[in-house]
Picture 1: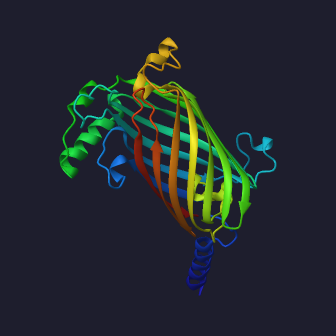
Picture 2 (picture 1 turned 135 degrees about the vertical axis):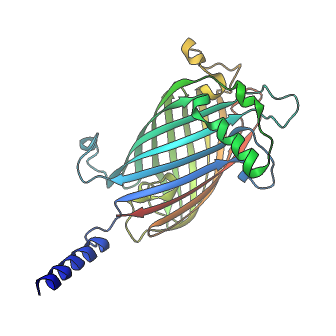
Picture 3 (picture 1 turned 90 degrees about the vertical axis):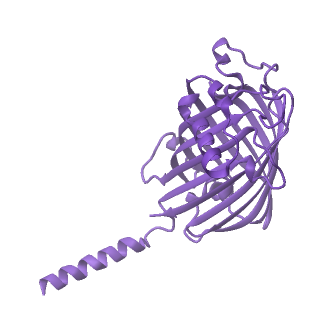
Length: 315
């Protein structure tokens, strides 16, 4: 009888662990995403911010973490780590514009802490990585062109911005300004300071449909703070006015000369807009967002690309 009793106890314990009904939320989340101007319908562009690939892992903490005592009114918090690779190119398909901006690859690891509140959230982030050939962004694009899409291999990557260590310190804050059952308005601002990007980007946004609070919503990758019965289906549209002081993917290592606000290379002030759609159900979240920028380059050419994300939550 003892082996039978032992097996029964083991199966019972395993079943209780698998169900984990003691918590009304999931402990972990994984996410994959990609950005690409190729995904913009009815256009054929491959320039400026040409692609990005990212993967993230998030987890909720059971114990106090950094700055926890400062935010006593929070509804929850979580941490996140991620890996990213981004590629930037000139408008190489248009004759005579090969030098409108340099080729640049930026690969980095990121760490974030997010605090959620009743009608707002606040996050802090740190990026560490390599800008230059060792990022492998150019090698990946040329491999993809040569083996998958059949597009031209780009010899310009041989003259990309040289290797340099990169870092950014980031923060994002969003606050609900007006809300109804299926419509709300919120303000958001994100800030970056580092030797890759230095900017302030405040904006106003509108949501339509069935959505959670900003602290638990899919558009900001905050679904880990939602409960297990999480349901969202909504559209998100917004506009932002970005003040850019430095962009190393255009200016290279000019930050070493403290060459901020150099309008010869970049527009210091320009508009960003987006239109997104998000769906979340229990463990799963998917999102698509169309991005438009009036142009960060001094020649003021606009930029369009689409972001796709998908995530899965679990215990």
